[in-house]
Length: 271
Image (cartoon, rainbow, N blue to C red; front, top):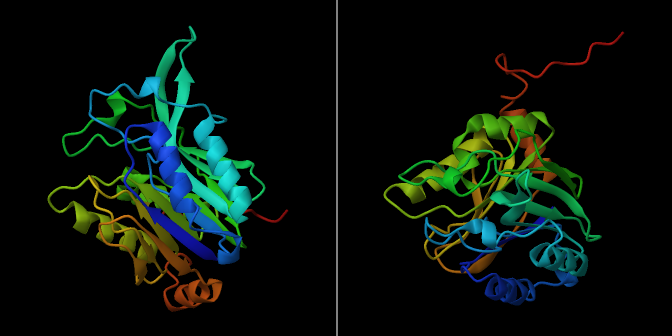
């Protein structure tokens, strides 16, 4: 599987962000042979300040940001994943707290899945739940180039049961778009947790983070925890090739999933 991770710094202007996405993805083409292109959480529009009301800028699943991603997926012949804010309404039809959503478009331009962030970032003095609604606890897994890609967003990374839920649903790649805020020890947490999720689940991890106000350091980690490609703190595109053979070798060397005794999903019993 050929992967490209886009590291960028989004603004609070959705129109400018669409122009930025066009400029960055315009450097890629069908000749690159990509299977999966991943952009960060909140690419559609940055979170802004804590008092920004995201209800007024959220978009429906067929809005302009989604249409843009669908067009690039068709042009590239690849799956494209990026984060935004999904519009919601309450029972009266008034705008409600939106979802923090990942949109995954297939190479034919159809929406393969929309993953609504389960774990909201109520941590380190921040309260994401005051501005956004949590999604249902449902695994979002997409078939890409013979692999199964599970979607999770930023703070989800701190919950190992989230990654294991995706693996139990068949994922052998974890895709982690993020806007991982800078702060003491935050970069170390980001890199450590990405490697931990790869090692404990023997999966590839592909993580696209924002930069600027965020730590950056987008990276690809193999199933034994080796960082095979990574970015620094500036906008860039990280390319990598994920090997099914490398995955098989890792799971032979470290058969921890097969050796599980706790939380093993039930197996079908033959009649």
